[in-house]
Length: 435
Image 1 (spheres, one colour):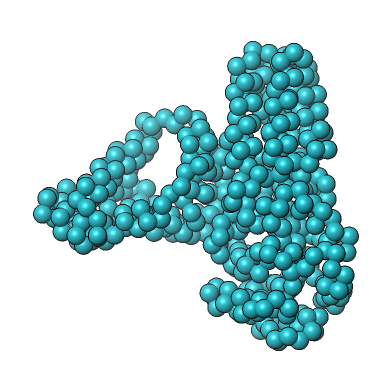
Image 2: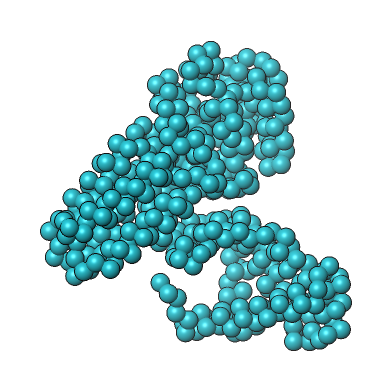
């Protein structure tokens, strides 16, 4: 997400860094490039005008003029304006009501039912909730079956009454949740067009009957500026409490995220950042601005890691690295834990300077990772713990057992040794990053 826009902004920042002072003369070209970058990212033209005018006015301010490092202040101005555009303050989910009732709405094909599954998984992991899925999409063929499959996969119960009236289903589901200790109720409704009066009336009727704590609209980020009309159309009928932007890991320009809050006043609460059922993240404006500007998002990486990585194992691994005792068995266990974070390329994109290192467009073949695992699993425990004993005959056996070649085994061993050296340097504070 925001990849192309971020690359254009990088060029702007580089130009600023090469400028001794910011003046009326040189700011014109810089502002023009920011305007083009925003328009090409599919940001609403009215917002583009306001944004560049604000940036220009502040960049020509007295504080920047007197600064010894005007480029750093200019980047701060850009960051502050981006945060304002994205919503300034984070809008967290409502989770303190017992039970918390969430009405999920959206267009057909926006990924609503899948997002119900992701959200149930998210609140269970982050807040310790006991979610319940409610099947109120009685019109789309197989919609109930899809929700039941998600529930089975996640081990989350699903309440359904077949093709009964959705209003009655929702009402009965709340009673069921109270009787069975489910404290987070996610109601999956039929996908609809906001101009579909019949289905919108049904949604309003459900809302009036159950009085939900959250009314979330699922929006496909690939829609671009059309999404703004959809949000406004829904919001006129229902008091939306927030949006979830799906497919933000795809080839989206990001303009809808930069325009949405400013034009609709509906906050973005979550974004879908992978196809997996744990592919949902909180939307934090300041972190998103940092990612656009190439500053990375280490906090989000840490949060993801804390959910899936065993802290005791991580500390044990760190101690081994420091002493130089890190072996292939540890490496294999680390790989298994890192895979739980989601697609590795999505994690690499959040590192500071990822674009400059070419990590933003990196495609990591899962088959290659599987081959590395196969090589290590074809070793005995002793061989994993003492890679030095791996001579020609052992390597031939490992290659045969893993369906790879001796060359691939040798390549893995070389990379592992290089990694160990780097880790020792980091542990001894002798390794300096370029940031």
